[in-house]
Amino acid sequence: MAQIHKHEKVIKIKYSAYRIPKVTDKLTSIELVAGDWSSNDSVKSWHYNLNGKAEILKERTQVDKAKKTLTLTALEGDVLRNCKTWKTTFQVAPKNETASCVKIILEYEKINEDDPVPRQYFYFVEGLAKEVGDNLSKA
View 1 (cartoon, rainbow, N blue to C red):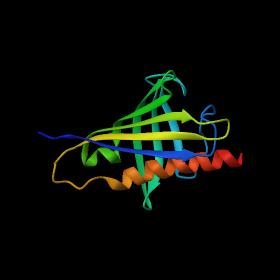
View 2 (view 1 turned 135 degrees about the vertical axis):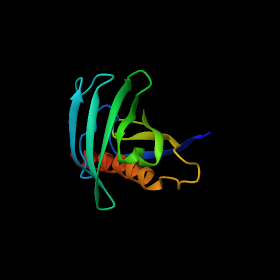
View 3 (view 1 turned 180 degrees about the horizontal axis):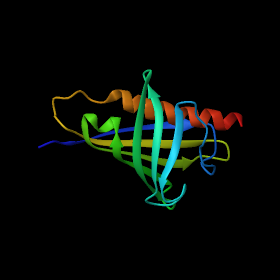
């Protein structure tokens, strides 16, 4: 039986958590498939480049304002080639008016336990969060 794996990392961003991040060069586009941009159970299709290759992720979004979390659950896409499940959670902890910490929690289940750990997606998500924070601090 496949095992659920978990990877966590906390990063500091130079911007308040009270603004919604919308700034990054890592994404080529995000399309709304169902729902609206800020509601629970909305579905979005993310188009991005990973190591020079165009990829897609279709995900369902869950927002918990009280816990300051945003969870993206993969429905379709390239990340599911080697994983049965993939879930990314961002938990924001405001530090002050100009800085926040973001805890990134990646949970996945590999199709085959012998498959390599999908580190390229960990690095992508961490880099994405850092870039959004850096770009917002310049706005």
